[in-house]
Amino acid sequence: MAIFGKSRNVSKSNKAFKSLNEFFFLVGDIGRFAARFFKEGFKAPFEWREIMRQSVEIGYHSLSLVGITAFIMGLVLTIQSRPTLVEFGAESWLPAMVSVSIVREIGPVITALIFAGKIGSRIGAELGSMKATEQIDAMEVSGTNPFKYLVTTRILSTTLMLPLLVIFADVIALYGAYLGVNIKGIVSPHLFFSQVIDALEYSDLIPYIIKTFFFGFTIGLIGCYMGYHSKKGTEGVGKSANSSVVIASLMVFILDLLAVQITDLFYEI
Image 1 (cartoon, rainbow, N blue to C red):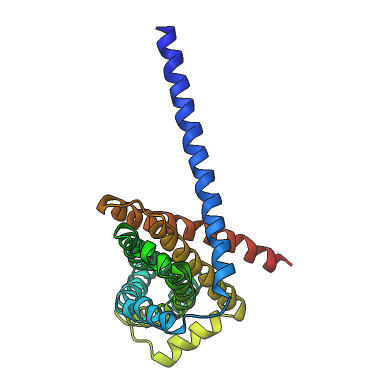
Image 2 (image 1 turned 180 degrees about the vertical axis):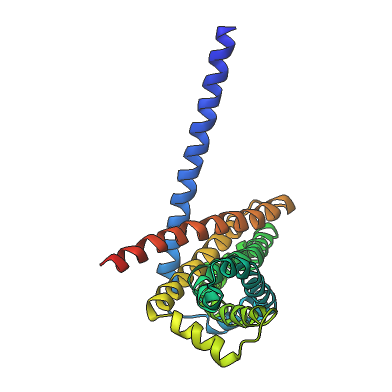
């Protein structure tokens, strides 16, 4: 029995070591993939037409989903926050509290998660299917640089489009918050948005817009990496799409944690 117990422990430790080894290999491989992007992405010729096409596909076609989600988010946050503020007699602080919450944290993170689910999975599945049907190999044989045409254009588009979507989502969410405030009261648009503007400062806006560029870059990078290195077959395409969403969403939270820590350091200085 002792021998069997030892063998089980050895097998568990081997599995843990193998999983840890695979994790570090994945991190290093993604790092090399990112380094290749910086090498290829800023070297002529540039695929401007493909970048514009991807920007329309990624940004414009996500407006409806992002807008609906942001509107509901602002409305629900306001409705749920009101009772607590009423208990303390601080109902007048509702516009300021909601605006700071949306602009600083909720708007960028929720929009990035929606973006990871919609665009990350799309990129992973799209490139994965191209890998499975050997279209990427055919581009290499024909003399076309598939990395530059397929990967750099998508990563640049996600990096540029997500900040614009976040700004759009913040505006829609604040409008939803305004309607939420008026459900049980009457507040003029001028008074509501004056309180919103007074509560926000440039130190609230700039850092939280800058981090959305990193969110967009990471989502595009993860989606492209998973699709570009997809295994052949329909199962490989499905795993690429699923892994793109899971890893990109996790990275959004990690980057957000780092951004909060860095921002706090600047505030202390």
